[in-house]
Length: 169
Image (cartoon, rainbow, N blue to C red; front, side, top):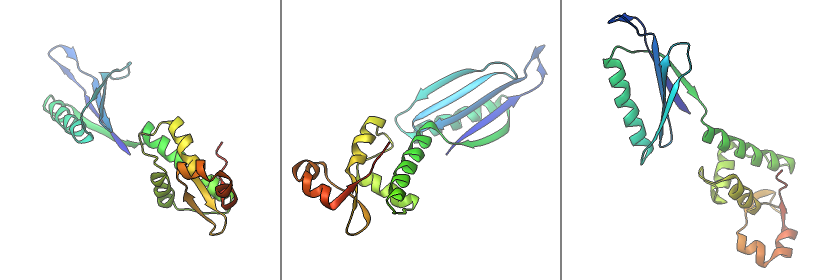
């Protein structure tokens, strides 16, 4: 979960209206910021870094700068990033398909199964569809297994007799 932090500067200084906001969050290696007058459309910026740690450090630096200018933190909201949502939806899809054939798996078991199948957070949807084809149900043991792609190609008939393929939509 990412945390969006919002800061506001409210008041009248130097004959100028300073009712403005600045909010920021990090999503992986990317720092996001939005700012502008309160109640109006925001401007935005994204900046990518070499690591999530560097993006977070940049955000901390920017927060210190805003606080030194007189901004006050008014909200801190946790939210699910697009990447986190995609991972959750993929996990849920695999769990649903396993339940259809009578196998209940915990969230951690599903994550481990997907890791074994080679699915990572960076896996595209197209790659995901290919990789989950290796997840089968062992008909004898009644448990999910990952069958190597080369085994699927070499022993197709034998594999299909022993392992049930899941029907991902």
